[in-house]
Image 1: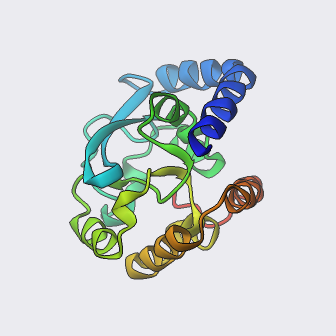
Image 2: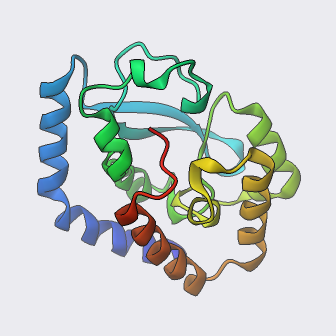
Amino acid sequence: MKRAFDLLLAAVACICLLLPVMLVAILVRLSSKGPALYWSDRVGRNNQIFKMPKFRSMRVGTPAVATHLLADPKVYLTPIGSFLRKSSLDELPQLWSILVGDMSFVGPRPALFNQHDLVELRTQEGVHELMPGLTGWAQVNGRDEIPIPDKVKLDAAYLRTRSIWLDIRILWMTLIKVLNRDNVSH
């Protein structure tokens, strides 16, 4: 049921967002050197690595670490990178990951391949069995502002209580957070 929901919603989103996606891709290419998309190695279901696309908000050559680990992330942002991140438009290409089955709309956000502490804690809690999501319970309860152990506790709570209705609630809460630009790292 969840996969059918994801496919239907992703197909509708792709149709509705086709023009904005094309416009953002053009703006990324015009505003900085390099490709429009950045393919990030991420940890998926059962700790399998997959390639997750994002619109490139950082300059080519930026270290592949979580943004908060960069000494001065602003140095690496492209001219429109901050806007892409604040608006969450950089996440739109992940619709592809949903369509091909690497991600779901709702689940724990996929860890970077080198976030070993996060991956280990999720594995201990059984969260690694979930399909990673475009958004999740941790994102609507703090997003980038909460420490990793707290994020994993929220992911584990989602694992225990997940349902289609909770997913719909999380999607709605995500929309509100994105529109208000709450808890977004720049």
